[in-house]
Length: 509
Image (cartoon, rainbow, N blue to C red; front, side):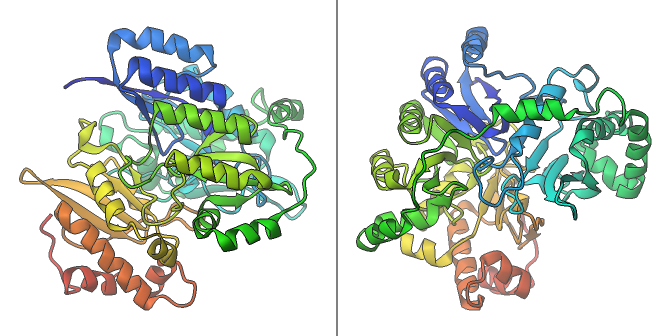
């Protein structure tokens, strides 16, 4: 079998119901009836015919969507928090600056052929839901002592065969200098980045080899030449873009949490969903609702055309017509009235899209793996399905709580296994598929890379190993510790012993 994969940009993961309907139409017309949402808030179609591509792209353009710079050695889709503009903990809406960067970097002649692909993420909240520390550039908003918004700029993060957590290159950057500083970073990378070895071409490699201090010096030298020139962003431009993201005119609604609590007491299933998938909104009387695409038997991140249409209709009915894509390959409705939560949940249940597992063991990030990707060493989708089928007890999922699992089918790490609380990497050993486990990874505001647990395991043993890890965690955790907290406190040895029977295991895969 041979087909082309087409990746379609969804800027900062935000799309309208009209665009989602178009995605459904494209899935039916040009693919095999489904699409795949990625960790970078895009959608991929895996069965596109080359001769159909012009018509497909023309149809995307009808709803103002493109595939420009979705691949290649250029600045890719700018990603952000799926709750942007609605989160109660937000300092400022990050989409304003995502859009500013998008307009600046798309078709930029100087940066259309970089040494390698380049990824930027922006977060506007203390809680990092955009994984900024594992991007080439990460932008983290904060308030200075005068209460003014500034960016902490991180550089050199990334995963793949040589993973790094990004370094802070500048602690406080004024919004007016955002474009010039990003240009300086890109220009230094474009000059010094390697083009002779694809495995050593990312900015993380040059930052690591030079050291962050030297890279900062080169960037500052370049920045001094351009910072007060044409790239200085006037406040009028920020205001213009901000107007596009102005909050809708919300109805004045009372918080009805007490009434909802009464319903939750008599409906245990609804209560589980509320605890797991519903998040507080910045406006009283509204909530943010997450739709996890991780039900048992479902390929993580995949959605069929009928479900795309259904979600688009629900967005129109319940959420002012807007849908978000999350870093963890789920969907989000960001403007749901509290009084409509129960009826929305019932409709999602009928669609089998109400699985109460957000951020839990079965909310798995998973790349397409060997089933679709020619670069993969192993199949990742069947492993995700095995885990999903193994952990079907929703009460046990709730007991375990926050625990992320990320699966990659090869060292390119499209499934972000390095930063999963439990990471799973598929490897080929003498023609057979094995899976290496890592523990302790995280992509949040306290980002870390996972530690390798031991020898690779055959597919059938992976759910058993995870069960052993979970049991060890439940045995050792204190009070309300998350898995990651317990792991960081007690280290890897108890988990290694739980899985292999001895803390001293020699690698065989």
